[in-house]
Length: 127
Image 1: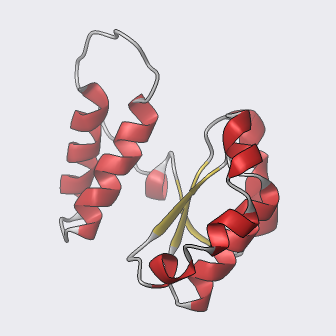
Image 2: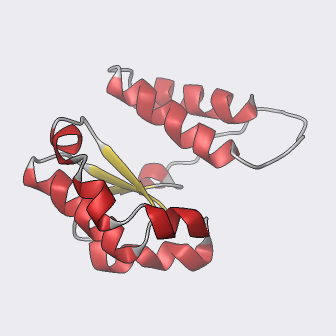
């Protein structure tokens, strides 16, 4: 994760300004450095693109403080709802949270409703 902080700088992110401006949603991850989080959110807000925040860990979740004014949604505990998990045998947890969030985001961006999107996210995490 240190590589993400080191290489995904605010200068690097700014080259994607046009992509961010036309996005349906920008999801930022607490592995980004605080300056990279700030510039990402500012680029999104300039074009009224909603911003979501993935805290990654308890320690890194504190990185939301300077950008909370931009953040529409925070994962986990989306809208404080509780969703049942699917029964699964745990092989490895690495990436399960990323699969959950990305499955939900893709589903939401294709106009599925929240419950359908959560179901797809849970299925992606299980897989």
